[in-house]
Amino acid sequence: MEKKSDENRKRNLEVVQSSSEDETCQTFVLHNEDHTLGNSLRYMVMKNPAIEFCGYTIPHPSENKINFRIQTRGGPAVDALQKGLTDLKEVSGHILTTFESKVQSYKRLQQRKDEADSNMDQS
Image (cartoon, rainbow, N blue to C red; front, side, top):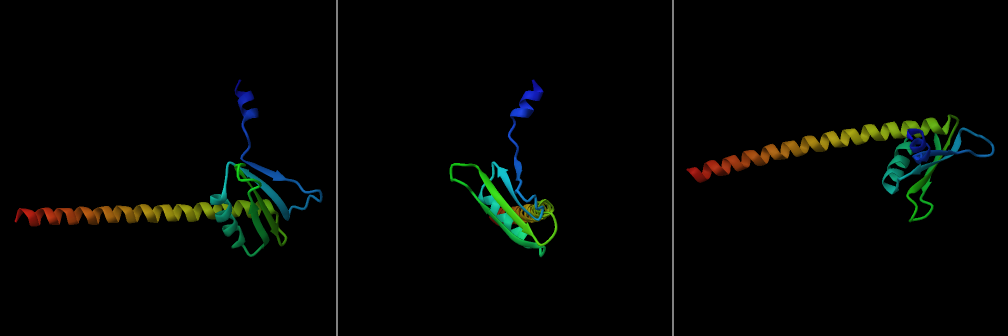
């Protein structure tokens, strides 16, 4: 039964092979994704100087997938995708850590203000 569920599970990433089998220019289909990942990943991939072109499309608004195209100046496109995903994960982690730190600082500041106000009321 477990084997059947694995077969029925939809893949999240597909590599669309071109007829020339050129590894420097490939299209990837990312299922269950939208502009949120598409635009941020495109930005991260384009920061790589080895990239000649990177773009994405959403085939139809009712489809929950993106077609992500990468063309490199020599290296495999799949490596550029992997680097882009890794870089995006690192940046997202930094943003999350910074945000959580600032929220905690704000909460501590608010707590001190509340304590000071409480002390003023008691005087």
